[in-house]
Length: 286
Ligand SMILES: C[S@@+](CC[C@H](N)C(=O)[O-])C[C@H]1O[C@@H](n2cnc3c(N)ncnc32)[C@H](O)[C@@H]1O
Image (cartoon, rainbow, N blue to C red; front, side):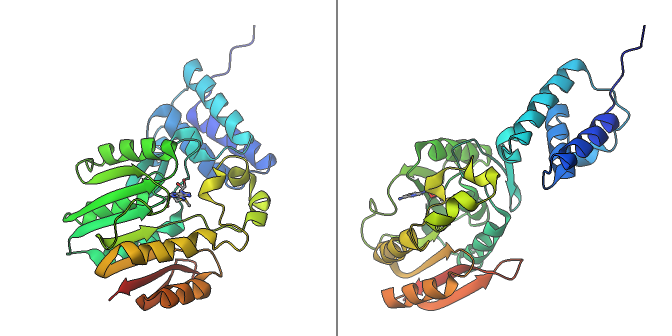
């Protein structure tokens, strides 16, 4: 009788990288490393310290279900339930926008403006809370309001605030933009709003178009529908001396700087992300 094959971590890693490559997935090695680390409850680095470790049936079966989901182009972060941004790990689930690396520019810009000061900051369209919570970690005198129209996002926000020990300073609010805020009551407003043009939504990669929530992405006909409203509302709710920064899409910065100035913001600036794209526009209500 043929002896049953023993699958080591290395066998599984090599076989699955080959398989996902054949199937045309964009970053097969990274996908497999993350899924294997998830199944074995270890770090990606540690995987390479246990390449000879045999995998048992339970681990192999769980791994197979993850691979099947990835083959249907489900984003890795929904499969593992985890996304990384700035210095932290955030829980994420289907129906909630996955944090993107380029959003670290918004965190950096807000930190530079607010570090060492105090007050209340609202994060409009907070999603997992990744921007607000990263900011609050490094601005201990700030209180944060995470606003979102999606109850699902707010439930995830709460869990992330708890995990980062920020529940006492980070409050979720279900709201439509800033309509619930009284005039001139905040020191800062930050946002990574929906800014993709509606007619571009279906042509995005399948990971996004099939799985991520449309309301997190759709910026209307020209992509600026939400930002136009946000700029006006931010100006209305900020105290004198208040700071506002919003992420923008590729090619939108110039139009958004114009909107900022037209509304009354001063010291209006754009900030580039690591790819050299103008990714954030900021200004002050002086
Ligand atoms: C691009 S996602 C950003 C999520 C998170 N801030 C991040 O950077 O990962 C935009 C978020 O705005 C929320 N949103 C959309 N329309 C909204 C509205 N009218 N009022 C408040 N939030 C809204 C969506 O639910 C989504 O969570």
